[in-house]
Each structure stands twice: as C-alpha cells, then as structure tokens.
Length: 288
Image (tube, rainbow, N blue to C red; front, side, top):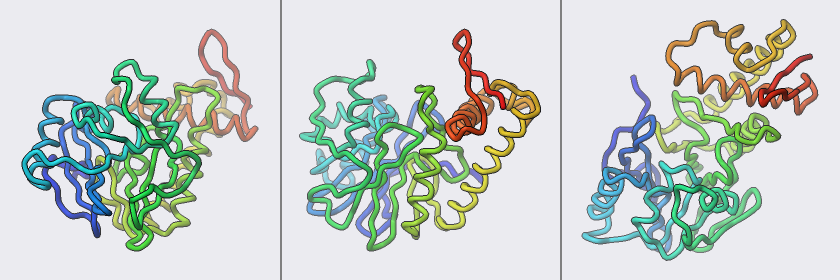
C-alpha cells in the first residue's frame, strides 16, 4: 500500500493544524502544505511554481479562508522548489525561514530575488506570534530545514526530514559536509522529544514515531557497517560499494538514491577516521 499523499484540500491532522496536498512535478508527484491557527493563520510551505500546484493551493485556500483569502503569515521549511516555488504567486508580506534556507533560496538561479525573508538562526527557538510552537533545525537533507514542534500535543511537522516508506535524500553537494552524521544527530534530537505523531510533506503521518525513529537509526547503523566492510574488502568508490552490497538495482532512480546515501555514509566514515577519503580526477575514493 502506497504511503504517498494524494492531492486534496485542507483536512485537520492535529490540533490547530490542517493539511492540504498539491501536485508536484517532481517525485513523488505531490507535496503537502500546512495551515496552523495561532493568532492568525500560518501557511507552512507553498508548493511548486507550476500552474497545477499554484491553482490547487489557491483553490484549497479559497475553500478554507474564503474567496481570495490569504494566510496572515508564511513559513518556509526549506528551499527545495517543490516547497518554495509557490511563494512568488502568494506574494507574502514576509516569509519566516531559517537563515541557511533563505540563503539557499536566494542563491538558486531558478528563484526570484527580493522575497521579504524574516530569518531565524541557530538550532532551536520560537517564531514570534506562533504561540505554542517551536522550531528545531533538521540537518542532512536541506540547508536550514525547519521542523515545527508543538510540545502540547507532541506533534512534529517534519517536512522532508522524515518520510514514511521513502528514503530521505541526503545532501552531497559539499564534499566536506557530513550530511549523514548531521541527519543521525537530528534523528537523535527528535527521538529525545518523544513526539506522538510526525507529519511529513510527502507521505502519510508517522503515527508511531518512537518505533520508526529506532528502526531508522538501526538501518543507518547497518548502512555504515556494510559500507565499512565493503571498503575493507576492496571497494573504493560509492559505485563499487553499491555493487558489493546490493548487486543489480532495478531502475536508475533507486540506484541514484542509494548512491547518495552510500556516498554520504562513506564521507561520514571518513569524518570519523574509520576510512581515508581521497579525490583524484574529480572522483572520490575511500580505503582503509
């Protein structure tokens, strides 16, 4: 049974929080936005910039807020275009985002300039006016990924950080970044919060977070051990580690996702000193 959210209008998913799902041009072809009631309405994310996504969000907001109704505030979880592309059509007075997410958005040649960002920075804090909610920095997937945490109901808006039945792609653009280690650290941070439910941007809610977080932690530890063993047996690149670990992978998309995770895992092992990392002719190599 698919865990991917089908498009649809706003429905209540937590106390004071409603979710709509709009089409996306990128896999898995749909993305959620959230509407939080707290001294006004707060829209979390904006969908993509495609006509289908913009019109779906507009229709959902019309049904929820009245014809032409707009949210009082906008929060951006992270800069990826399936979440941020609709900002220009919304034309908000301000967009709350982590400083790193705002920088990433403004550095992208595909996005407009001059959006009125109001930024937060650090690893956790509050958003003025968003009563009862806190933000937590999620790392490993996207720069400045905001997770929204409601301690009263123990609800976490996890964005793309955690997905039910799907792997979260880890960031590999910066070869000196340990995105694997950062993702694991966020996993541990969130586990300590003991959420009752985690709402995601692409899949159905994670309704047993403690069990899911524990399984994900163990899966990542197994990934590290497999990668470590593959390098000890002579594999030198992420491609070779994939071949020794999995053999034939059906479909280029699945292989690409595994390559991202394996490369991130190998870089993490290098950061820990378990393996050595070398670069030659633009390709990364690893050895014991």
